[in-house]
Structure formats: C-alpha cells, structure tokens
Image (tube, rainbow, N blue to C red; front, side):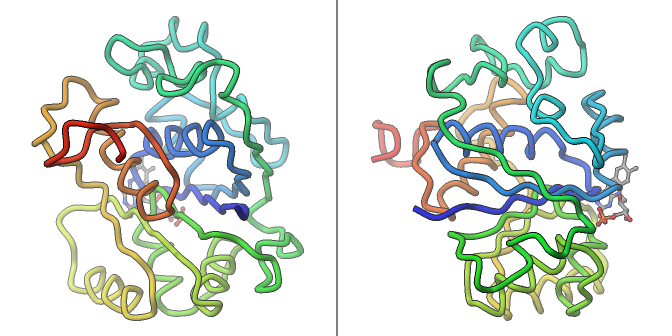
Length: 232
Ligand SMILES: Cc1cc2nc3c(=O)[nH]c(=O)nc-3n(C[C@H](O)[C@H](O)[C@H](O)COP(=O)(O)O)c2cc1C
C-alpha cells in the first residue's frame, strides 16, 4: 500500500476535502497534503477554519469535536446522528489516526511528490478550481499541486480531479476533455439523491465514497445501489 496525495484548491466544497482526508487517514493511509492560497480563503468562508500554509497543523483541517459542537459552520461536518468528523462517524476513535498526514507547502518543489521517483497510489485534487484544472490540462506547472498532478499523468498513475463549477464554459469543458484524454479522472462534485440523503454530510459522503472507490480505498460511507450490504 503506497502513499496518497491530496491537494485542496480554491473551489467551493472545502467540506469534501476535510471529509476525504479524514476518511483516508481513518483507513490507515499516509496522505501527502498540499493546499493552494485560494483554498485558504474558501476554508475561512465556508467552514470558518483558518489555515496557515506556512505553519500548518492537522487540527487546522480536522477540528476537535468540541470545536465542532460550538461552531455553526463546523456543524456542516457533523453527520446526522453521528459524531463529528474529528471523531469519525465511520471509524472508531482508536482507529481515527491510524494513518498519517504529511504536509507540503505549495511552493516546495523539493517535496517527494514533485518527482516521478516517489511512488504513490494516486492523487486527488479536491475541490479542484477551474484555474488549477486549466493549469494541469495545459502543462503549466506553476506550483507543487500542478507539478504533482503532472507527475501522476506522466507516470500513468491515478489522478482524480473533483471540479466544482456551474455552468461550465467551453474552455472548462475543453480542459476537462484534455485532462481525461491524458489519463485524468474527472469526478465532479455532483452528489446523487437516490440514496435518500438526510443531511449535508450524507451528500458529502456520496462524493467522498466515489473518490475512495476510484482510489481502491475500502469504506463504509454508504450502501451501494442494488446491494443491501455495504461495500461488498
Ligand atoms: C469563496 C470562493 C469560492 C470560489 N469557488 C470557486 C469554484 O467553485 N470554482 C472555481 O473554479 N473557482 C472558485 N473560486 C475562485 C478560485 O478560488 C480562483 O480562481 C483561484 O485563483 C483558484 O486558485 P487555485 O486553483 O490556485 O486554488 C472561488 C473563490 C472564492 C473566494
């Protein structure tokens, strides 16, 4: 089992990113995380979480349970009837930090994930802005996120991008097509409703489950269509 790379960029949907990292770490995976400056702005607005890219700490994205209880925005992270994400709703407390988070500054091109010789099981950009998508689709490596994505494409490894934009311009559609042709997986943040979601976290888990499926990470986030059992 190799490490995974997660990048967070300045599209709406920071809640997906938080949940994804939590689920991957809870599943015992080592996650290399990098974050764009625009994501900092979105995290503040959407979740009232303050990220410091120069002095990063895991609690900046995985807040403690008591923080969640006392913050209206952070309650978005609280699944219906379950505990908050800091004490995962899908894994027991003892398992929650069985994986590891390794942070890389978005300007640090000396990070292992900037090189093809650093082996991974894949990379997810969640959420993925149209700007980051365009940079990758056109080979413009302007930060560590673009470079790591470029590396995943050239090494023919899994690259999953989770765009959040609507409607889509022809330019955005062209960039998505270009990226898909280069081997990327376009996984838009478009939750389904056939699993009868009861809360925002249920919608979030729909997308995170799809990402985990693509990565081959086992999860129990939701039951599968046509199957009464979970994750069989
Ligand atoms: C609150 C907020 C929400 C945004 N939502 C989106 C979005 O959903 N999709 C998108 O492509 N850009 C969105 N943007 C704009 C991007 O953040 C902006 O284009 C930025 O340059 C992207 O940089 P990055 O790709 O390096 O993160 C949003 C910006 C803000 C402040």
